[in-house]
Image (cartoon, rainbow, N blue to C red; front, side, top):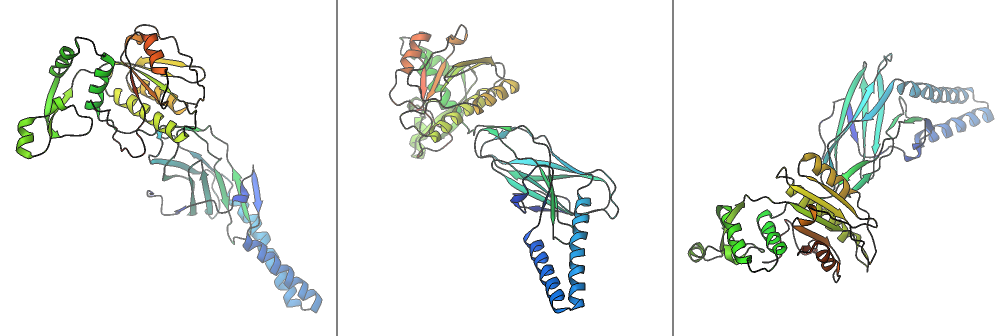
Length: 396
């Protein structure tokens, strides 16, 4: 996918010649230039050996054209620079508009011709080619790219090059390097209603007041309408009259107005042959939950990451806190430790509804956390390969 660029600029898919990846002004003779030099030497040798002056004159002319190309190509890069423009947040597997700016600062007699700009990163390789520009100008060059994985996104320095006018020699210059940009984890839409209802019931436990609390929670939700039954819906939501009339299960849909605080615990474990893809699914689920909770501003939202040194992040939902948590999730490092060091979680964060995300199939981690927090917590794993998003909470 691409977007419009100035008519004098063409979009190139890749770098013309990867041998030019070097610091400062670099020179390289392309294949055409090598053939030109070979033909020049052959004609010169034949003219000298056979005493044919016309061949010698032609060889001198060809050599002069190569030298003229050497002089003109350097002039095309004079006063030309480029930089990457700031962009918004980058999310894994989501297209984003990537922008660069080509600046023609000095006046060049006859204008600029045949200047190329190359931009390469971990998951992109794009280029632009300026056919002609008469005077000093600033060109905004844009292209859609799609980063594939979360974490730091390394980029190579921007690269300016030219072969003007004959294409017999190529000059290039690398611009200053930039710090890697950060790619947030891939995010999906949660099925908010059933997910939050499941979380409320799971973290409340099986006390004697469970039925009364459940009825009270339903009364505190606004009736929204009717819809077909989906996996994860509670049988208590079935509207039997509509079900009998339509011949399929129909459930009541509610808009829960009781937004609640949350403590999210992420266990980035990859031991016992657990694949890194499962870890990425786990981080993606965590990021999806963080984004969904942040839609209700002012809630307490804590994040615990059980890395080799566990960390606790506490704050209230909002755009700034969302960005902070997504930045932290983008930098999660996998761990293979069997024994987990549990962090100290003080009040009020230790009293919030708590959700543990882990890929451990058989572990006492949940029981250990419940012993520390003195209350039940919910545990969840990312969807399996045969399950589709939006993620549905476990059956209730």
